[in-house]
Image (cartoon, rainbow, N blue to C red; front, side, top):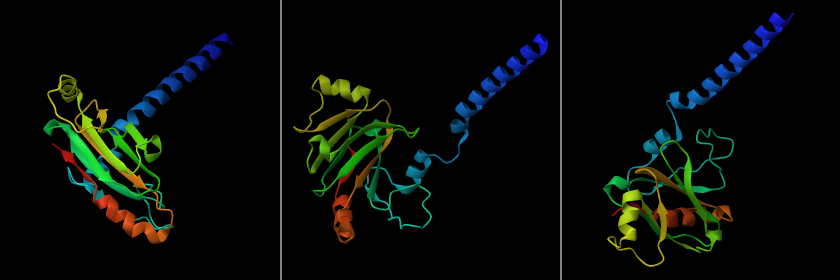
Length: 180
């Protein structure tokens, strides 16, 4: 009886360990990730406006059909990155992602930024240069330090009415992004 109980406990523990190992390694084996999708959608240093998603249509990126999306790929090994522009006076958000698809920074216009988005993205070496005043930056620049060089920024706009979508998309297309 005790022997059976020990075998049962051992089997459950071994099964649990195998289960955890499989769950933790599966994301590393995925061929299609958020990063590979972003690479396919956007050229470096240029804002790409994503096609609108129609309700009820296939939505492989799981985007909200009520929002307008702009995607910008950056490589900080070329120099500090920037995102600059004036966005509409409605809700918007910016999220910065690393190659593993993890959000490393996020902000909205509700954080007191207003309509003007002036963001500088720096790796650790560039941040040190910034602290030693070896890099010139504009006053009021939102400074964001990143751990790696490859990243992409996703800007989301929420037009209050469907008729405003084209104007919001134009404003988003005017946003500048790249490296300096």
